[in-house]
Amino acid sequence: MPPRSPRTRGCSRSSAVPRRCKPSSARWARSFTGGGTGTLSLVANGSGGGAPTNDTCATPIVVPPGGGSITFNSSLAVSDAPTSPSGTCSGNGFFNDIWFSWTPATRGNATLSTCAGAQFDTRMELWTGCPGGGGSVIACNDDYCGNLSAMTVSVDCGTPYLVRIGSYSPAAFGSGVLTVVPGTVQCTTPCPADFNHDQVVTGADLAMMLANWGNPGTGDMNSDGVVNGTDLGLFLSGWGPCPG
Image 1 (cartoon, helix red, strand yellow):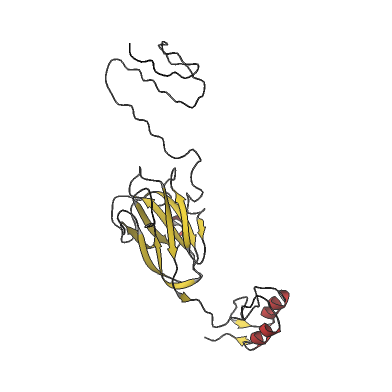
Image 2 (image 1 turned 180 degrees about the horizontal axis):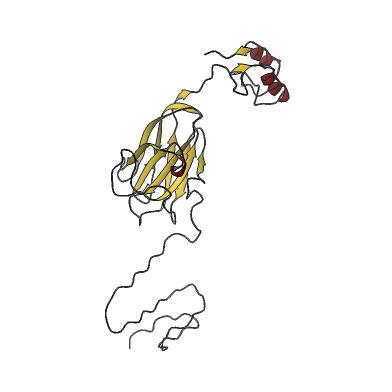
């Protein structure tokens, strides 16, 4: 006699019509045919926790201005942009994408990479904005380090970018690490006392400084962590229209 297969509570193997079974940790499927043959395929994706929080361009994970390494998981993600690779990338698809936003604190050549490790064949794009909001691709890569991605692109200080990571196949997804290495050119301003960015240093800027007197932040001209008389002297030396 063949060994008895486990049964789920409340299920009957002798019934000609399957009945509802009480929930348990096991899951069973029965298939009835009229005597022919066929294939039953079952696919279960993800960990049951729902789609990633950064599944859409509108809800990206924020990368610190100074870059860093961020773990991700694209399980249960769906495509939120064209599935055909954009820009200079070639290939047959771009699926299961997730998004990151990054506003660099420095400028110059920055490197974005999944070469630290990913469970699937990654593709990567850098966007100026969301696909549905007029954004465009300015850089992309596929298979830089094996089947993982990396790209080096010139970025500007204070400019927001969107990083899109996806897979070449609808069936490819999983966890990985995004590594962002920023450029090395420091961001400078020719008019550091222009706190409200109206291209002229006036009483409006002075009011902002005085409102923050004794604290770090706006008005701390020498970056020593406190707004004081030294900063006021530096501020007054820049009074008037900004250069350029």
